[in-house]
Image 1 (cartoon, one colour):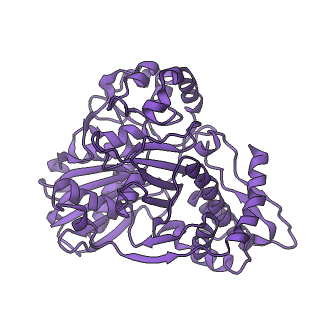
Image 2: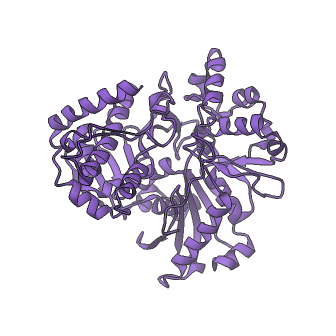
Length: 491
């Protein structure tokens, strides 16, 4: 019996096939090989074509099937992880009406801030735990205000993972965790947010049907099953945003446990049993995958938009063409502090932890006679680690004090330079595991289908790769002080 995990990322679609008996990963692959483009028609805008997501999903699954390492018809359960906070709108024939407005799009910031100010008298932060910000509900309000002809045709809006699920099953549905990341869940009333829908003038009928995170979202459509070589009995039974799913993939379910990622964006995600909210909504609280009204499990999320995307950009701009092994090797030869070069990694839209300001990326203190590409590569990774530290201080101010941080051995956490800088500046041990989002989605499907009867069965194959003990903390603290001063000058 096999499980299929789909991870809808910003850069590509990744899929993994897991043997549910042995918990062995049989194959993982992604599509496309080059990073998928982000469409930016205006400053601060970020869109992608959902039809392209679907095309790439099918090609990734077919690529995995072509490995010959398993029988595709043995796949019984499918899980989907996806880039959070996006907006997809469809008509009654399930046709996409416009490009998806994705997570790092900033066009709705002012709308969200206006809503937050006007709704503050209704205790909005206490009931929703976040500002509407530029999250999904505000993006939909932007469409209503600026593209009324599109809005009139909307049958349902959905999150990116809901769209892929719909293409597989023909069913339109969502869950509480997904709605909470769009700031559409009222935690006090434990229901869809009539408060925000009414404020924005959004008809409640546009909300998809709501199911538990672990549930049957539908069986594969016969034509889709035939095209992909899968069984018509295979069901989609788990959907989650990428960060709650990353936590799941690391077996992070309980209060006090903390996960991190450093892909296109960077995140620290801490599980809590308290309705934590930052007074300025610089960190955000969503329903975790195992959240229930009787036993609350909330994910407190710190997000940095510009992490892996900065590392990729600086690689290409220096002519390295994403040869990360070379970057990491040469950056490791440069001393801590990159001989004075400092980089702020905030060039990918408005940053929530900086009060939704668009600060931009900055390279400071360049000396053409002393500094080369390796200095930029090290300063870039250090700057990303320092951004994590800046955000972690916000989490600590909100009562989150991690004793250890778990992360997948992937993306920036593949780099020894970044590993050391992250652990050193946060002064927190980091445990790295051989797991990723697509594997997590597959394990989530095993739980959602009941193939795994409990978490112990699901995570018996989770293997720790290494533990990084904080080193050189005083030196990193010195460098961070000068980095932070530059940031504060820009704010």
